[in-house]
Image (tube, rainbow over all chains, first blue to last red; front, side, top):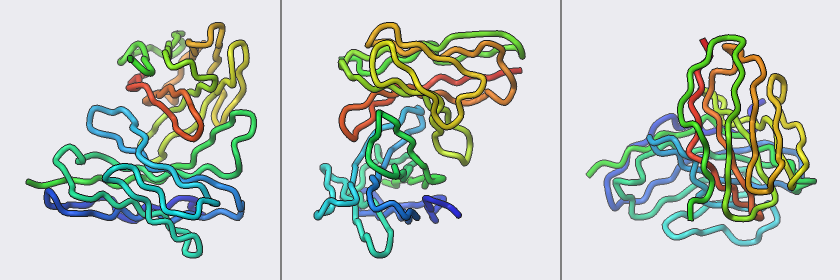
Length: 118
Length: 110
């Protein structure tokens, strides 16, 4: 079974509008972390936002917010006021368990390609 | 502040050749990682290090070796390259829950 599912291979959004990128996850571990990364066409991986399984509030980082619905096992990324520079591939990832000795196995989804139109 | 720097950015090898990828970070982070990215598979952990002089295997370590002689440097070696090692390689360092990635190395093995 897929651990991380991103059902939208591609998304389009008009500049200055908000967009939601979907991510669902599957784990039986009560401790886990959820991440979103951005990969522009230049190829680098850029950390956007992190949500811990025990965090009470949804994470926010500037224009990025993570809509964390634990019971539904979803961790959608919301980008407000889209900009042309937001056009990129977006990956949802999960780490099962707490950090243990530095091991950091992130399970990645297949990604969603976002295109922002002027 | 350069962050995480990987060299080289591109490399083409013939099957059986060896090479070393260099990762350098200037943030004084203890933890460093090597990942590979293949189409449709996200990133997979190859090896990692929790500090100077230490290394450990990740998810897909076969065919790779690593060394962390200095805290700021994490080297990934391929002793005998195989076509299956054609991939994009990312180095990262970690502070708390945040990974800082290098810009990646595109490696092709013919």
